[in-house]
Image (cartoon, rainbow, N blue to C red):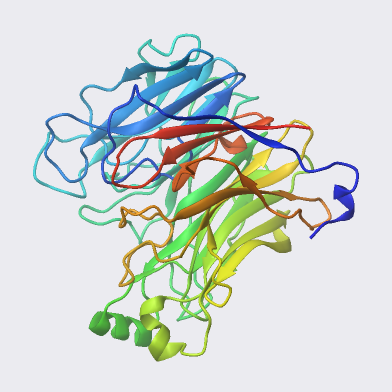
Length: 471
């Protein structure tokens, strides 16, 4: 679908310049490099920096067996900058840029010595600040000053946003209950680091309420976030045990995903230092057919509009035959534009269904260029079922060793709400799950797209690709 905005500028050429293993890094654990919704890759000028959750030698645990490792790529190739040698973690450590000379890393360090627990170990969240001039120097450690004492665990999901021009960041981190994935009874803590290096503002996002099933309060997680000139935006996935009594009883008897992940909730403030966050907006929902939805990315354009990119799975397969026998299964990649807290437009960027049979969209990110063009970079997969149908997670693919990816694609979104036809990215071997550097963690608009991820979840090695957009 071509709009008026496309007529005077052709789609850019796509030249793959690099496909390689990041060979200076070790192996991943089962959580994989993608177990963070904030990217673990940034670009500064002609250099790229990545972090991975590298396995700790000798730690015989199924989780909490990694630590961070940091690597840099310049014209000479990849070099290991440094790695943590003592502290453990469960998940990847996302990165962001602060000004032109500082790199921030969110690290959720496990407090206890190695033991036989697999989930629920207490942690101390921290921001590690590195000098981009010399990444081998030990980082400065900053401990967030939360609004009140909270318990954080290895399963405390977090989201990081950086405003590199102003040298500021915001961190959202869920408080976890011992042995549980989420705290569904308390607000979501956030903390703001200002340009002077002070934790000057902190607070908590109240729990939103579902619009159905008695309007229960729900936790939010896996947030896509933006911070720009102190305007802060958060969009997270609803997380609650199945609230529909009939569906819950069916799942308890026959199996199925007991977590409700069918809604996305959005909130914002125009100034994190002056005004409270708004009330919650339910930005997306797959409630009617018990589907799933997940935020992929969030960005802000030059006019201040916020663009949300999310996936929607139409149906929960385990319930389909009983509750939705005539419904069609599909996956859609959707762009939602939000202005001043209100949805002004929704656009289906890509979609696939059983009837079409040609594939479905998956992992996806925005990419902005220096001339203010907005693209969506996404994976196109053979099937949506690259997970355990009985109740696994359809977005990640950790449960399958078989590559499901067909190709990577790029589409341009035009200001009038239309878009280009998708173009394939000519990788010889596309990555199954991947990150791109994000504007919301400080990477400037670029004519180069960097891709970091894995081919499949049996290799446990990280790969990198680079694509240049030509005239």
